Image (cartoon, rainbow, N blue to C red; front, side, top):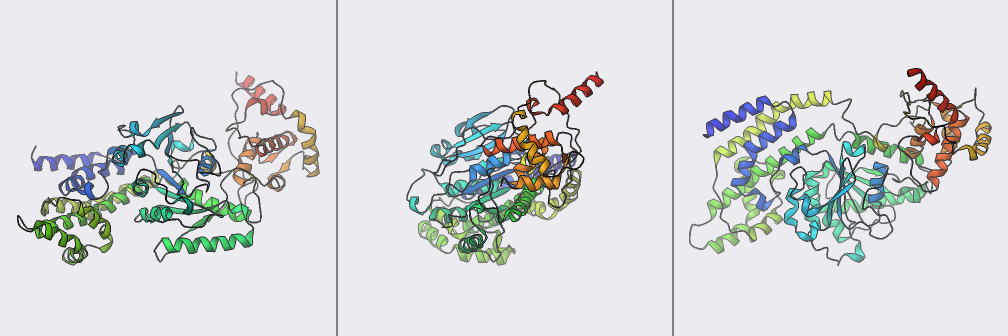
Length: 546
C-alpha cells in the first residue's frame, strides 16, 4: 500500500472514531510509533505503547518505606482483604502486586502477565526473571476495582538495610510504573521521617511525573497536636531536600485504617484531609482520557528531542576513521549538543532527556544511527500542533457526558451519606433499602438490646427516634474513623429516614462492637441482623407485591 493510500486510510479512521482514547491510539500508531522505531527510541527510553496502555482503567501506584501502612491503606480503600496481603511491623510486602477487578478471586504470576495482551504489563519482561518472580496480579470482585486498579509495592528499604540487593533494578521498575499510572500515593510514617538512599533513588525515578504524586503523612493519630506540627515540618524539610523544585508539595495528613484512633485531637483535620484526597482519587475515571492525552503529548515532545539528538550524532560521526575517539568526544560534549539543538530547532530544555542518563546509555551503544527524516518529523509536528487541538472539543464533550456516572463507586471513595457528612447531619440516602430475602430467624442483637436501650433513652429521643446529630456524638466516642462510622450508619438506618429508632440504634451499637473486636463489616445488611419490626414491614411489602 502506498504512503498516500495509508494516509487516506488513516484520515478515514480518525473520522470514524468517536472517542478520545481510540483517536489517541490511531495518532500514536500513525505519527509517533514510526518515529520511535526509526530512531530507536526504546533503546534509550521507555518501550513502545500497546492498545492495553490506552484501554486500561486508571491505576494508582502506592509507594512508601517499610511499615508505613501501604497494604493497610489499600485495604481501607477496598474495605476487604485481597489474596496474598499481609500486614505487620516487619517488611511483609516483598512483591509488586497489581490488584484488578475480576469476577472470581485469583492470582496470575508475573511471567504469565507479560504475555497477556489484555493487561498493560507486557513490556515488563526486560526487567528479568528475578523481578517477574516478585510480580503478580490479583483479581478480586470489588466495586472499587470496577473503576480503578491499584499497584502495591515492596517497602522502600530503610537506612539500616540499604546494602541489601533486590536482584533487579528497583528504581527503574518504579519509573516504568510511574509513567503508566494515573496517581502515585507516597505514604510516609509519622515515626519514620529519615530519607534512605533507596528512598532518594525512588524519588529520583519519579522525576517528570510529579503532577501525579500525592504525599500522605499516615498514622498521624499516634501523635498529639504539638508533635504533629513538628513531624509535619520535619517531613516537609526532608522532602524538600529530595524534591528539587521551588513548589511546596501538598501533604495529606490522616490515619488510613479502620482501627480506633489513638489520639482524637485532630479528628476533624483528618476527616477534611481524607475528603480532599478521596475527592481527587474519585475523579480519576472521569479524567482518564485527559491523562492519556497529556502523557502522549509529553512522550511526543521527548520523541522529537530524541530524534534531533540521534540525527545530530549521526551527522557528527565520521564514516570510517577515528570513530572510537569521536564517539567518546560526542558523549562528553552532549550538553553542548543539547544547547545547539535547542537554539537551532526552538525546543524547550524541559523536553530533553536527562543528559547524564543519555550519556550512560550512549556509552554502551554501537552508534549506528540514522539521519534526519523531515517527513516523519513533519507528521509529529502536525500531531502536536493540529491533531491534539482538534481533540479538545471531543474531550470536553466526554467529560460533560461522564460528569454524573464516571466516578468511583463503593468503599470510602464513594460519596458518603448520613450524619457523618460535615455540615449536613440529617442528609440521608434516597434509596428504598430493599432487602430481597427476609428471614424469621432470631435477631442476633436481642441479647444486648437492653444495654443499648439504656443508652438510647439517656440520649433523649424525640417521638421514639434519635436525630443524626445525637447519634453522631455518641458514635464518635468509639474513636473509630468517620468513614467506618458512616458505613455503620448506612447499615443501621434501615428505613433510610436519617434517624434511628431503638432497634436501629441497637443494631448500630452491635456493629460498632463487632468492628472494635477486629472483625469486618458486611457490605449489605444480612437478614439475621435486620430488626424484627423492619422484617414485618418487608414481609408485608413482598406479600403485597405478590
